[in-house]
Amino acid sequence: MRLGLIGATGHWHSYAAALDRVPGLVLAAVAPAGPEETVGSFDHAPGLSADTRRFEDAEELLDTALLDVVQVAARCDRIPGWTLRCLERGLPVLAEKPLAMDLPTLERLIREAERTGAALVPMHTMRAVPELAAVRRAVRAGAIGEPLLSFSQKSYKWGASRPDWYRSRETFPGLAPWAGIHAFDWLYWILGDVFTEVSGREGASAHPDFPACASQAGFVFTMSNGGVSSVTLDYLRPEGAGSHGDERLRVAGTRGVVELSLAEGRLTLTTATDGPRPVPVRPQLDLFTRLLRSLRGEGPPPIEPIEAGRITEIALKAQQAAETGRAISLEDSPFRRA
Image 1 (cartoon, helix red, strand yellow):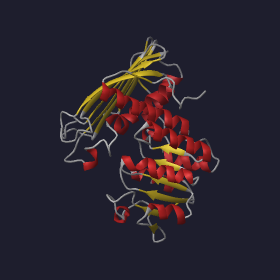
Image 2 (cartoon, rainbow, N blue to C red):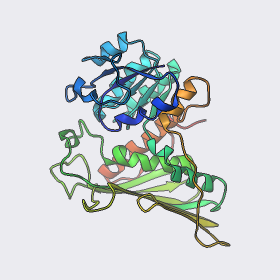
Image 3 (cartoon, rainbow, N blue to C red):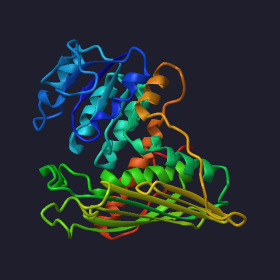
C-alpha cells in the first residue's frame, strides 16, 4: 500500500504508527503543500527511504506517484484544495483539520467524497485517546443515565512564537475550528448529534498581535433534550506547567457523573450508589491504521464523510457565533443523516 504525504504542518506525523501496524505500507512519495514548506521538511519523516520519491510540486505527486492513500497536513487555507484534488482522483485522504474554512467549500468536499466513494477522514486524533473512549463507553452504556450537562476544556501553552499564518483570517480559521474542533468532536462522538444551537465569545487579549487566533474563548451548546454543553478554549496555560496541554471533560447525567483530566491522569465515575471509582481503559488504534484497515475491507472507516462534515460544520458555526455575538442554529444541516 503506497502512501503519499502532502504537507509537513500540524499533526503531520499522524501516519507514523500505521507503518508498524499495517503490513506492506510504504512511504512512496512526499511533497510540500506550499512555498512555506520545502522538500527538506521531510528529511526526518518516519518511513522515509531511498525509494521515497520527493516532489517539489504536489500536483505532480498526485499525477505520477501511483498512490493508494494520501495524507494532507498543510496550512489551514491549503487543506481543502489539496484534499479536493485527492478526492477528484478517487484517492482516500487523511486530512488535517479543519477540512475547510467555510461552509460552501466544506459541502463541496463532502459531496465529492460521496460522489467518488473515496474515504475522507479528518485528523480528529483524540478519538484514539483511551480515556476518552472509556468515557464514551460509560455514557453509551447508561452509567450516568441521560446526559444533561457537560464541560470540556482545552488549554494550551502559547510558546515562544507562532507562525505568521496564525495572524490572519485568510490563513487561520479561528480557535474554534483549529483547537476547539477536537472537543466538539469528542462531544459528538460521546453524546451523539444532539446540538441544536451554539453561542460563543472570544478575545485575543493575551496576544493582540495575532488577532485571528483568540487567546481565550467560551462556547455554550444547547442540546436537543434541554441539556447544556459548555466548552472553553485557551492559549493561557503557563509555560511552567508540567504538560503542554490541559484537557478536561465532565459529563453529568440523571444518575451519575464521569470526570476526566488527561493532564492529571484521572478518570472517575460517580453514581447514586457508588462513590468515585476509576473507569477501566483499553488501548485504542490510531485513526490512520483504522482507515487503512477499512480500505482493505477489515472494518468500517473511523469517520464517515457525512460525520466529518457535521463536526466541521459545528466548529465553523461556533467560530461564527463567537465573532458575531449571536446564537447560531445547528439544525437544518446538510450533514445530518436522514
